[in-house]
Amino acid sequence: MGDVAAKIKIMPNSPDVDLDDLQDRLEESLPQGAKIRGFQRDDVAFGLVALLPTVIVPDGAGGTEAVEEAFNDVDGVESVAVENVGRL
Image (cartoon, rainbow, N blue to C red; front, side, top):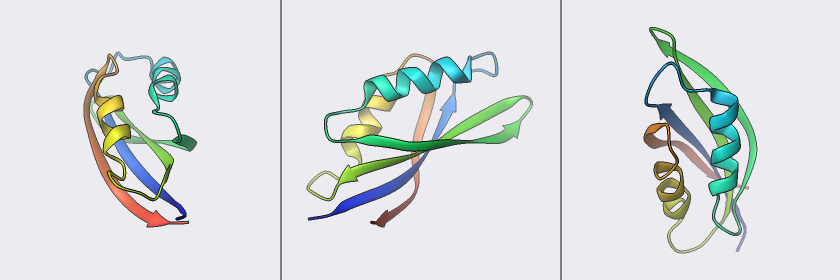
């Protein structure tokens, strides 16, 4: 089995959320075997900025579900959505 790269869109629950701190907390929440290979930021509207980490996970049962659940549990996260998935 190989690895899968997934771009995940994370919406903070407020424009006041410190995005640098949120990035750190997202990295700390990763399940074992997953890693982040960079973040992008996307201006959404009214000062709200979404984080778009590219997450590398092993290609196996469950795919990105564990990462999505971990990200949903981080304080300051409103929603988590997988934008794009591909094999490495």
